Length: 394
Picture 1 (cartoon, rainbow, N blue to C red):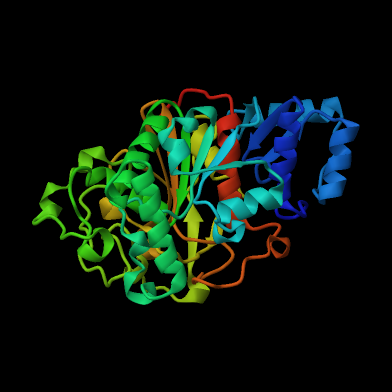
Picture 2 (cartoon, helix red, strand yellow; picture 1 turned 180 degrees about the vertical axis):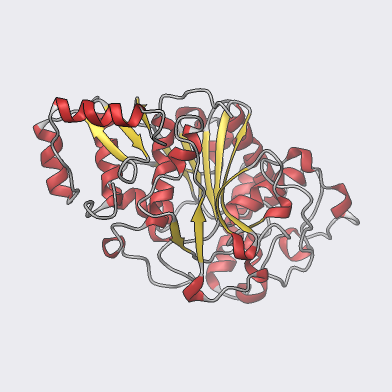
């Protein structure tokens, strides 16, 4: 999985998933040649690699043992992690969502990793218990329809999506979309606390935490829910309820395309050609989880925008681990945390290979980006639940 020899990093994750589905022995060699996978050899696996265009090497038992001995050396920042099963994956997304609207569904499809789509009715009906890994599509859990009001309130798609959301909320027994979305957020919270793995990008990161913090408080203006927001609602926010963020200031103006001070989009002073973020380095033997999530063939990743592009470090809780940052702008791009028995990862931005994705832009063709380091970070999270967990030592 290094930069020099792997022709398709993204589909290599699909090959690893295929191997797990077929009960092959799989080890993830953290920090060894870009986070390579050591898989028991079969003719079917070789054939699948050739079909999918994934580079591989056939090793003797002696060579394999030599690599594992090198990895186990105390002087090497490497570790071999056993992958035990193919995780069952759910993508939380509305009906009719196009796969190219979301980076995760795009890369899962490209890597040929199967997933199922679920939405509010299924979540409220406890369907999450069936899955090992959950991705939150670019959702607005605050009931403000993505804060798209100023630019898109007269467009047919906005009018339809608002009407569909209201109809679904009423069908599920709620008088407001914000109340129904809060109920969904609470179910997702319980899923993670119970041992689930949650991954979110863009606006699904901060809007999720804002919804939890504002539980029982009306923060939506009349154009969103038909009645005024609650007076002094900022002072009623409970940061104890959130996963990752604290001390943020909500954006009250419905005409501003922003949820709160968590996001760094409007605070950025970075030119497009110099917009990169750096992956943090961790001890593979002592901290295998963050090491696993940061496996890549480069430590420097091209930046990309989104409604929520990056996270204001001043709003991060003390127990949140920053996996990647843009130090120049004092922003966190990729963060991880533990909640109860489960784990969550938040990744800023919309599409790692579309710098400034806008509504209506053409979809990204991943065939043109088979070695994308930004997309690799998503796929690290997909395989994360497959790993045999060791207790973190730090």
